Amino acid sequence: MTDSFDRSLKIAPSILAADFAAFGAECEAVEAQGADWVHVDVMDGHFVPNITFGPAMCAALRPHIRGTMDVHLMIAPVDPYIDAFARAGADVITAHVEAGPHVHRTLQAIRASGARPGVALNPGTPAEAVATLLDDVDMVCVMTVNPGFGGQSFLPAQTDKIRRLRQMIGDRPVHIQADGGIDPDTAASVVAAGADVLVAGSAVFRGGSVADADVYGRNIRAIRSAARPVS
Ligand SMILES: O=C(CO)[C@@H](O)[C@H](O)COP(=O)(O)O
Image 1 (spheres, rainbow, N blue to C red):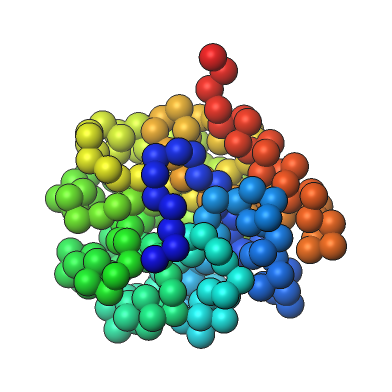
Image 2 (cartoon, helix red, strand yellow):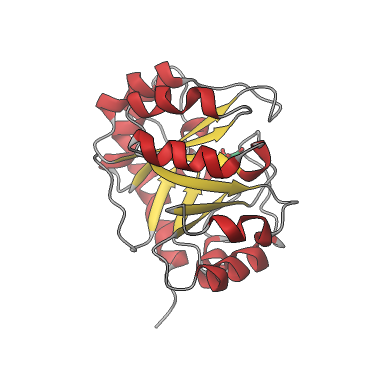
């Protein structure tokens, strides 16, 4: 396993906003520019209204990601594909609580595969939906947009859900990931509420390219410094 899972703030660029013709180089570029994890959004055109990548893409990306490959499954069903994503080298595999029907079994299967299990909640799903799962996950992903597309506006009501989840998690070693619409303007509120992994697509890749990767570094630093509480 290549992941870094300590409690420091993680910035996880979503490659949904990268150049689709250059994914390997894009992963290398964001890591070189300070990304902590690389976030891979897997969509099936059924659970969400968009289609993206499968396990073969993750396997192809693996040699280009030195650190944590964070795979977010927006698919249903989940269980038939877990081992394929684990074999492809996913360090973290997150499944949606809404993907059903047996999410606890799904999380056990992710753990058994050797990956770290995460559970994601859509904006319309209350924090309490994962209350009985908190001993079985390493991360809760709070969707701060409706899943399916990058470039959407942050939903501020999700900040209260993050706060509630942080209370519910207590002293368990469980990350809270905020996913969607994260930029220097929204990062501080989710981190203050208790998030410690920030997924950002547009706000990292905007304005840059593999050939002009310094922009990625500036964008990542802008999110990180906005997220840091002023002391
Ligand atoms: O999972 C999703 C969308 O379904 C997210 O990971 C977005 O892809 C993040 O992109 P931005 O909102 O930062 O552009």
